[in-house]
Image 1 (cartoon, rainbow, N blue to C red):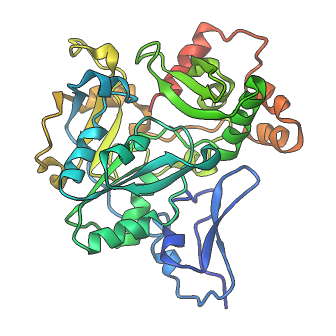
Image 2 (cartoon, rainbow, N blue to C red):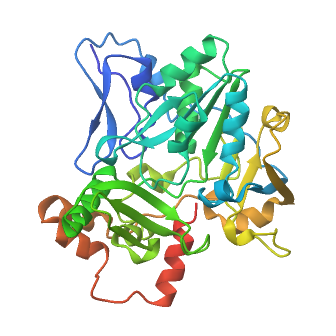
Length: 378
């Protein structure tokens, strides 16, 4: 039996649609720390995995909207606890009020990021906040499909490639499905982050108990990477001042497919697209320093939802949003030193890979910081 056709390694996004469609496949971690499908014993050659691959069988995109929303929660505590303006919480409330399920990325054991479903506002708290890692979708596509088959509302949030994978797995849209994607700036290697977090734990002689990639302790425009440890200590620095942030912003350890991402474009995969509204022009909304969400309403279904009045919004031109979010028009470019980084990462002690990411004994210049902040904006 010939092996089934899967997306080429340099194009595979790791969305997991193929694994959800066939129990003969599993996701395996490669040397760089990324998940890829692997065909196990007993393959019958049915090609179901090929048919549900959104790279091999692309689905249509929603056209770019003419206008967008600058939106923010009216409840300040929830807004400050969100990475931007907190609009995702509005979609969560809408879904839960209808007895639905919400799927999002959350940290599990050893801070491994994975998608799971939730049915209460308390459980959905784990989904809030940006997480600059690739999440494993596991069997969440199947679980979402089962909930939809039972007539329930489902809100599924993720990267654009994950949303495309969900639609491909389901065979199209569903009446009670709401999808929400982030403006993605590429997904870093989970293994690189795991080793970086372990490095911090060794420095603080304690285990990490919480991680926030975009903490607003210094305001929305200068987000901090914050780790709390079980000995009561905290590590908190502006993202662009950390080694991990430097490597991420410099595109040193992103998934290979991110360099040719077909979803980094004006046309979108999901019902809603969310991001920080970077580049927001005056007049600024009241309390803009607390965070403002960029919201693209991409589908007729999304436009027709009667969302709960938890937020305020202003209509802005699409061009204003695109000017501050490069991934709305084109993919990123990999760092030419990416290969060299992974050679160091795989063959040398981690402190050497860390030094490669960010020479801590040197100060990062103002121009580099500005560039990193721009690259980190999602």
